[in-house]
Length: 234
Image 1 (spheres, one colour):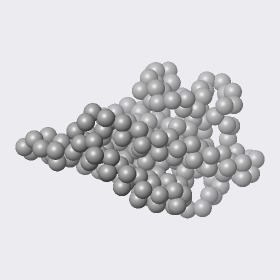
Image 2 (cartoon, rainbow, N blue to C red; image 1 turned 120 degrees about the horizontal axis):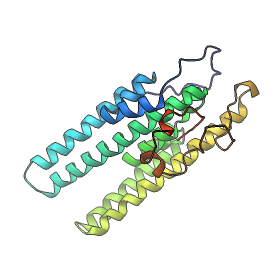
Image 3 (cartoon, one colour; image 1 turned 45 degrees about the vertical axis):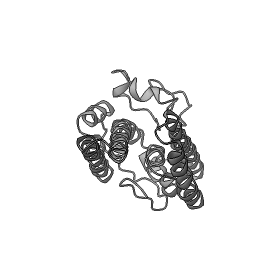
């Protein structure tokens, strides 16, 4: 499962270096049209799928809010809002970091195990992020067990405000997928020839900043950081 990503076995990059991409421009156009930044960076498949899924979330939201008020319509509207919001944030974050990875020559390393894709999939589904990362057993457990558990708890709680706590389950799975993806990237980095390795996120590089320390970095990007080209992996 992926958002337009090629998960074929790891191959070394060609000697020809792609044209530099502006991380700031990719970020800004994704704010206007979700998926445009990925397309600008050459990840057109991921960009188109992001835009289509975002549009689907918007349609669900409109349908849910336009029909006569009921528990079913509220649920549809809630799903639509969550899908649209998560994919909107994913779009500009992914575009920004993809541009930085291309400029650093590490996009070939990140693409097969993209932590942003894995995180987004686990936020929106019951474990599809694990499938994307090749953790099929974990994906089945999340899909079957957590799906049944969350549905049962949701019915038991009804309209109680405590149902919002159920959002902690996909959030925890998203963080776990992010951790697994970064571990896989580091394993691939260590297995690659020294000449193909890139600096680790923690290595000091002039003008660079640490790897994603938290979600606050996604929405608090300054104009100075938008033009960065360091080896950042979100």
